[in-house]
Image (tube, rainbow, N blue to C red; front, top):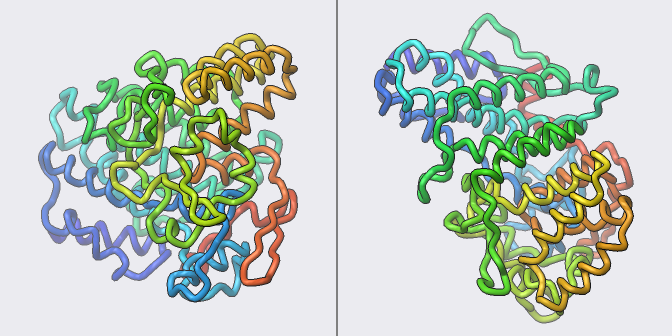
Length: 440
């Protein structure tokens, strides 16, 4: 017990982002020194549980929402985020999960560094440690896409990234690494995970855990952001070889984000929390993206509330969703275009949208897509991503890696503008982290 408590204190000292009190919720490690496979599974489960539900707050920065609720006591949680006010914020403003993601990384490091030598070789051990590598890769992927510039092959070697903490070491300092260095570590972790994971899928109820399908989905997203189109498509194809199911909304008008959906691959994150759901409506930009007559998602995603529309996604544990098959189809289509294979891109898009539109709507789109050139189809695919993944946390990342468009928000008579290519497309490391760690 003293040994593990020491690990916690060393980790806090090394990362130096917060006080020890903030880490007191790491109770499983304070209760027992992990020795058995079951012990280490408990440690990693706590790491999964600790994964932050931050996708809601990224949605507040996008063009997806109208913030409402004048006078509501929870408005200060989101108002400065909505205004892209990242300095001098209200003390009640929600912070983006810098320390939370490093807490997850701490748990994975315990598995990766300690369990290797303690546990006897077995498929279960390999699966467990493989999950730890995959979860660490995912945490670093979120850190680098929240707090650093988008990956640019020409500048990633000099662009400032985030600290890299791979083990507990009191003597080690944690300066920020480059974007390239962090992505290299992410890829290294996914490769380690790929060599260890042996479950193609996880059973429902345990599909918050990584499987091969979930790892390939993560790799596909990573390589997409890195603009390594062939690797992104290869990973998408490997995931689709395990699960290529799509919910046909003509036959089953349900949210495909549910953990027990046949589209579900990794059901870890809550994407749109209840507090925000009660304070926001779908924006005009988001609503305008849909054909309300033919797009079967519209009545499933939105419910009229006076002249506004409430968003029906999220706010329930059964809608936890990190990866699902629909993303794989849209990545495959996008990368086909980047690889100059227009015909394959069209085929993949049609396979996907056949499950999202009425029969007449699909027939019309089929005709339109047949006439599209690569530029037109790219625009359509990105619009499909906007429609499909509304308030699932993908929009902010998509805007960062593509157009970084201008967005205008209005609240209580004040207008706020995020200009095109605004530096605020990169979120600053939270003030308490910068205060405690001068290396940031």
